[in-house]
Structures are given as C-alpha cells and as structure tokens.
Length: 401
Image (cartoon, rainbow, N blue to C red; front, side, top):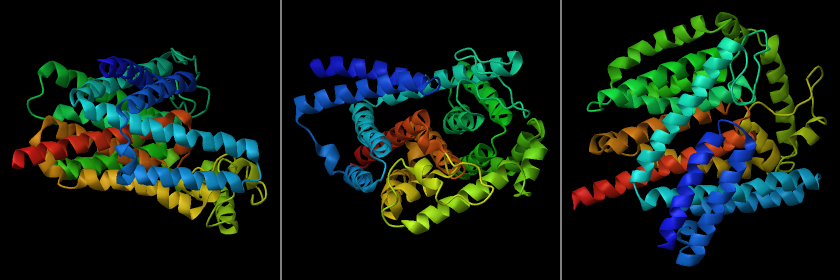
C-alpha cells in the first residue's frame, strides 16, 4: 500500500519534470530530487538492489568511479565538486525512472501523452514568441538578427535539441488504427513543432532531425524516404536566412563556424595534454585559456559535448559514458521490426529511439550535455527507451511460450 502511494507521488513529479525541462532549471531540479528521494525510500523498503547488477547499472557505477577520479585529479576543487555532484543525481534519476516505468506498462503510455502535451505547450509558446516577440513563461525576447525562436529555453540551439528529441513521438499519427481525434492532435503538434524547428535556425538540430527521419522511415514506410530531401529543402527555404545559414557551413572562416573551429582546435590541444584521465570534471572553462588559439573567443564550451567530456574526464570517461546509450540503442534496435508489429508500444519505442538518436547526433555540434535541462532530458529518454524495450522483450517472450 505504501509503495503504491509513493508511486502516485513519483508519477506526479515525473509530470512536473517533463514540464520543468521546458521551462527552467529550478522545477527540473526539484522534481528530479523528489523522484530520487522516493526511489531511495522504496529501495530501503524492498531491499532490492538488482538494478546495480545489470550491465547498465555496472557501467553507471564505473562512470561514478571515473568521475570521482577526475574530481580528485582536478586543480579546481569547487568547480569539479559541482560537476561531480551531478553524476550521482543523474545515475539515480535513471534508476528511479526505469523502476517506475517497469512496474506498470500503462505508465509508459501516460508518459507518452504527457510528453505530447508538454511539447505542444512549448511549441505554442514558441509560436507566441515569434508573433509577439517574447515568450509566455519567461518573457524571452527575440533580439538577434536571424529572428531565431527559442521559446522558454536559454538558446535557439537548446530549443532545437528539445524539439528533435520529442517531435518523432508525433509520428504515431502514421500508425493505422489511431482514433481520428488523436491523429488530428498528433498532426497538429507535429506541424507546430516542425515550424518551430525551422525557426530555431539550428543547423545541428536540422541535421539531427533529418538523420532521425531517415532512421525512422527506413524501418517504417520506406516509401517516405524519398520525401526527406524535400523536407530538408523546405527547412532551409522557410527558415529566416536559412540559405545564409547553410552557406556559412561552406565558409569556415566566417561567422560562428569559424569560432567553433578554433574552439575545437583548442579543445583538441587540451585532450592531447591529458588524453587518458582528462584535466578534471567541469574544468573546461578554467583550463581552456592555456590552450586557446590566437583570435579564438574565450571558451565556455567546446560546442561538441563528446570532445569536451574527453578533455575533462579523459578517454576512459568518454568511452564509459558512450557505452551506456550504445547499449540502450543496440538493445532497442535488436529485432525492432518485430517489436513494432507486436504491440502499439513498439511504435512508441521506435519514435522515442529516433528522438534519442537525434539528441545524440545534435550533441556532436553543441553543448547539450552541459545544459541541466537537456542533460536531464537525455537521461529521461534513455530510461524511457530502455523501459519500453524491456517491456516488449518480456511481451515477446510470453508470446513465444
């Protein structure tokens, strides 16, 4: 009885978390810590720590150890302590979410619709911002010359990362048997989110979304693959200064592309100085000055989360981290076509997996893993994909018996 009550409270805070990710750090943090706190209470009551013995559980424990070693090696105690303290939070958030979803498969469906609702609200907020010049929640104003939309996020690229992660979920309108009202809702959310993606003018997000579409339609309705180049052209043509943004990729010495190339050059020098163990978790800003190339702006972030992670925690930390999403993705892809045909959950799995992959691709071009809300989104989707896949594997085993 107590476990059920705790699960009700957990579900409430998971919904708060889904909304908080789209608004600000504070509600995201509060919801995360409540979810973790309740999970720890349930763990003490049940005395069940099997989650630590799973392959991902073991990797997360190793990630904790490597991060702690990186913290000990750091020359900047306070900065590294702040960075290291986030690691156990994300680890336990992942455990808490997978535990919650796997206790009752219906929660995964409810969470799907919560994601659709919160994304619809966030997309509408973006539309409001584009019309009136400011968003509803935080009064963020569009001020740059490119008129880039960013809703209640800090930066258009952050909004783009969020969009490409949740937008594939709306592809469920393609599935046969969806009630017409729900199909209409999903189409409306997709069109709104797609327009917002265009208006972010985030080139990394565009690439991530196009790659996610290729993956999705390679497994579901291959005929639509022929339309993807047209979608790419539409994105560029409808985006404010979209052609200019694409041309910028071919001129690496101008605009932000040139700055990013210099940042990456400096980051690579940091990596070469400490390739194995890194220079210390959460110390990129402190150490970059030593390796900053001439004419390079002061580096707060490398604009490539993986290289920055390598620079801070070394190749060991990077490999351990990347092994976690790799396991989740490989498990989910295994026999995925059969999973799609087995249950409606299979289609949700495919859509969530596409969003997860899109996020990881975009992270190659930006600082997603150094944004509190986006890092939380990453762990939420990782837990969601893993839980959906785990449920479908059990379903297929029961069908075979």
